[in-house]
Length: 181
Image (cartoon, rainbow, N blue to C red):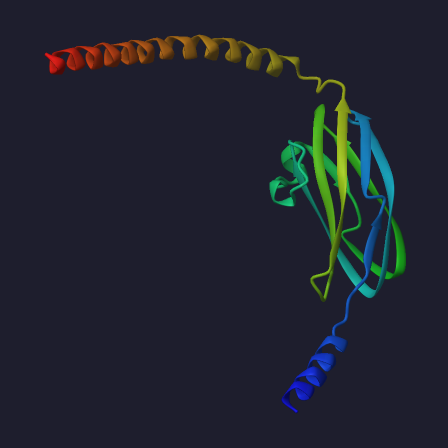
C-alpha cells in the first residue's frame, strides 16, 4: 500500500515539472573587422516561452569554452557592442549584434540570454578579429622601449640569485665533507 502511494505521489510530482525550450542560432558568430569599422551579425532566438529574455555579454582576451573565464566587459577591451538587452519573445525573434573596436587584436565573448522568470538560458560564442592600427604609434614605441629595458632588469636581478644558489651548493658540499670526517 505504501509503495503504491509513493508511486502515485512521484507521478504527480514528475508531471508537474515544466521545461522551457530556448534555442539560439547560429551557435557562434564571427566578426572580422578593421579598427573603427562597425560590423553586424543577425541571430535568431527560438522559444516556447512567452515573455522577456534578458541579454548579457561577457568577454575574455583568451579563448576558452568555460564561461567562468569570461570576466571582462566590452569597455575594458575597448569594444562597443550593441545588442538587444531585453527582448519580448513569442515563439521566435530575430535581432542583430553589432560591434566596433578601437584597438586591433583577437577577442572572445559570450552573449547569454536568460528568461526573466526562470533559470533557463542560452548562449552564443562570439569571435572577434580586429585588424588595423590604433593611430597612436608613440604608445607602441614607449611600450617597446620599456620591454627591452625590463629584459635587462631581469638579467641583472637573476645574477645575484645565481650567486646565492652557487653559495648554497658550495656550503652544502663543505658541510657534507666536514660531517663525513
